[in-house]
Image (tube, rainbow, N blue to C red; front, side, top):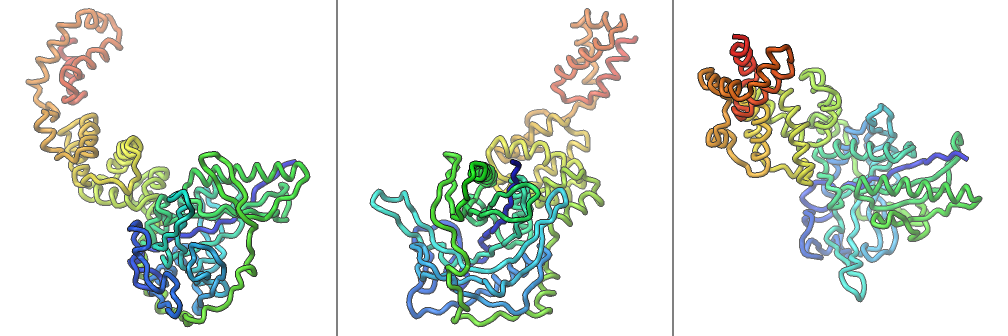
Length: 473
């Protein structure tokens, strides 16, 4: 029997505010355990939350960027559950009137993934299970860090669509300045709700949830593994159990954790310590006016105004760091196409070889712009530009000084080229005779020998011209 997967995502992103959602504790990643906490975020009795206005602004930004409706009157609710990383035994979230509803994110192929809602909430702490052999330790530094939970409709039908969606969403959040989206630090993570049904059926199957996935590779592997697991159960005549499962990426398998809760299990009720939030049209328009250019808009502009290929623009606009590099370098050197080619080729290659992300680049963009200007001015060859850029990338050298010290400038003086060509002709009598006998490949060999003697620092066109003249005469 043929089956298909049906997936809905709950993506949590930590917001780039300096302080937490309901108190003034810092939000930066790291720090000694339990040093970024106060009476409010540690849940001490008698404390009252005060809403961080920046959280609301970031939520509206995200809603506008994902084509959502902004709820003019929204409020917070209490989500009640006991867990050791939640010292209050409840989480302040939004259930009944979330701040954003009914939006979408468009995938690479044009398919639109519907967004059911985006709501604001506070993060929980972190449990350290392996810190001591005697038990589990709790670090409450993350308690109260502001989150947006972006809930999709069950519109995904493959792991590839999920990965594409997360990449698109990550770019939107980064370009709007809402979040740094560092998955390795947990500031962007996804809960995967997956069910399986017969192909052609409109009935949803029983879903399972895998929580807090923070690696695109692990997400793809977990989805495909869970699809196969559920399909095998159905094929054998069994029933899938609604539950929360833990994915072990090292083993490549998931295991059951607990039965999956529904909303009624959390006994939601309106948060009594926070008033409703009233958002005016004027506030929304003021935020809209300050919105930066979004990835899809940049991509369209790069193609229409700069003539860049669609594939290149897709890579460039997938990262804020790459966009900043591209726009800075192309403005300095005045050549968008060559800048794009360098980034797509040499920058991406060196990043991959170094095991780095674009955000970890630390070379001076002006050095790359200088190399491109020297290349376009025919002061250096393309091969030299690539070799020197490797030194710029790894050792942060001054490209002009390095080129001068290592005598890498192109030799344009024909008086300096001619003796080298004559030397090659004298040393390669066989190839010269073959060329005169009509073997054109012999000329290519002689050109190669000349360029080798000149260390690639002479225009190949000039070398070829002089070689032909000397051979023919």
